[in-house]
Figure 1: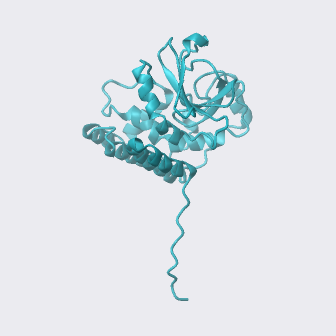
Figure 2: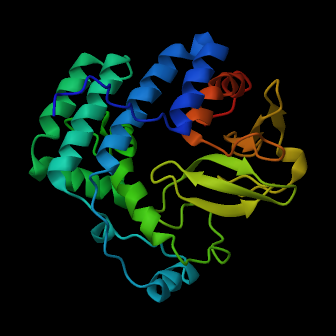
Figure 3: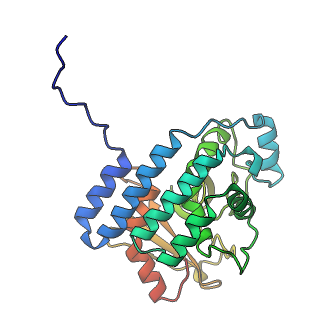
Length: 279
């Protein structure tokens, strides 16, 4: 048969990509941040498609860990293919360097470090365990890089780990899957919100009112302020001077999309900083 000239159909855009493109049109001042996020989303998509399915303990064992206040995913549970981890780290570093979030010297240090498993593996293990970084680290921006570079592997593990789990007994502000801190939330109603992990994107229920950092619950110490469209809010704390951003899902046209909403709320970060709060 003669060759056909029919064009190969393009892959449809994900909801995150289409929402990011729309955000760039609505708020052109955010275009550099949107463009960087689009590159990170595409990298995540490519890598996550190649991450293997982890073999995890049965639901009963995972549920026991939840009941005892232990994170579900030990380091050994993560589906880490080290050549893929190195690739993710290097390409993430390249993206951050292109958008001036890491300078040339730090980028060069990171590229050298991620070439060798003997350097990268202990650094990743330390980061995952929450141990403080060495002051003499050869790559001082590593802890800024790893949350992005490791996300394909952690997110794949959470996809499996959350199946069949009851998280109602988890009463900690850290992630039940990887023990990471939250970096966003979604308000479901007047009584409940979901916290979203900064490392693995896992979600877990939390009271609607209360500081996730110092556990302050006095309403007078917990100011909030809203975006102009009232879709986003900053939940601040006058006791520890920290804050957490949140998406109001009530009556929303779409679900929370952290890769979009974290960029859309950058003006709220500036407003919070002006008021003396730290993220």
